Amino acid sequence: MVDRKRKHLPKIRIPIWIQLACIFTFITVLISAMFSIIIINKQKEELYKHTVKIGMITLDYFASDARIPLLKNDILHLNSLIKNAKSVDGILYGIVVDHEDQIVAHTNLEKIGSTFTEFNKRMGTVRIGDTDYFQYTSPEGQRALNLKKPVTFKDKKLGEVYVGISIDFIEDLIRKNRSTMIIITASVVLFGLLTSAILGIHFSRPISELVEATEEIGGGNYLHRVSLERKDELGNLATAFNHMSQDLWRKSLMQESFGKYVGSDVLDMIMVDPENMWLKGQRNESTTLFADIRGFVAYYSDAKEPEAVVERLNEFFEIATQIIIKHGGYVDKFIGDAILAVFGVPVNKGNHVERAVRTAVDLQKKLKRGNKNGNKFFTSVGISIDSGTVVSGNIGSQVKMEYTVIGDSVNTASRLNGLAGAGEIIISSNVYEKIKDIIDIKALGSKKIKGIPYPIEVYKVLDIKD
Image (tube, rainbow, N blue to C red; front, top):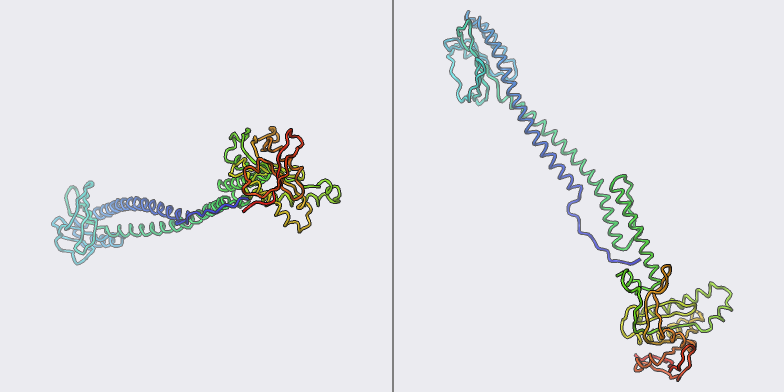
């Protein structure tokens, strides 16, 4: 699995559940306030109309029952009539005045017999039939609704009846209703806060898990899973996320495994541009290294356990592969007990001839040091190197393909390997001419190589100069 540097997300300043709670509270308070204002104003209007209606009924009652007592000047009966008005909630006073504006009945007995005076600080008068009413403020600071109606008998005016209803009483009722609305609003807001907080946590927690999972995936942990047992969109999102991470893990595993088959350099070429012309052959200058185990067939025949053979062979391939990659080479293929490496393709890292020779010298030294574990293959490796023009590309069919190189230098390197004894490095004149200043060699003269029509100058590398 590729290890990627984990990128941390910025710290959350305001969690979603707090945002939801604030939004819900704001909306609740706004709606409650609007409804409260509308309802209270409506109630106030209705209460005022209802008060006027009650006042007019009371006024009609007094005017009707005051006719005979006014004709007989029955003060006692009139005051008994007015006295009952005080028992009604909101009624401030009741007054009966005769035709000479003398108060003959009053809820305040001290004012009986005095001359009636009009109310001060009165507001606009409203007339309904023969009834007048208006609002005014008393000297004591009370706000009242005064209703007035004449008392008549056979079209003769006997006097007037007045009823005062407290406006403050109405305001007290409205105030009580307003307090009730505030309590209800506060209860709704509290309930809303709790509900929105629970809902916010209910939704923000899985989102946080998905964010954490995204960071894990971004860090290369494709096996991370989201555990959300929910039957909603977030549950579906978690399921889809797990499918995605599973697919990414499979692709990563395939990429990692595929890279072992085609080599990291070729894999990078494919991943960068899968549709590129890398599939087609290209002509390049490269150096080919061929390393083969001497006497492998005899060793294999004598060995009793095939597993032991494979294990020791893999030990050799592991060391050889690491050194080839270290020096910028590409492992083209494993051929039985041999390994074919190419320098200069598919990625030309420069000095491919020198890199190949340094690889060979480094490999023989490494194998010699590693022979302490008793692996006979380490002291039985012969290496041959040639350099020249090759054609590199993807070769095969639609069913099976492999990236490889073909050319005379590849064949020559393979043929030269027959001249390389155990622990030896054989190079062609093509290689020698390019790096002769940095290597110690022993000239082996012209050699006739099988499959090549002309003799080849060959050299054995003794060491490479630092």
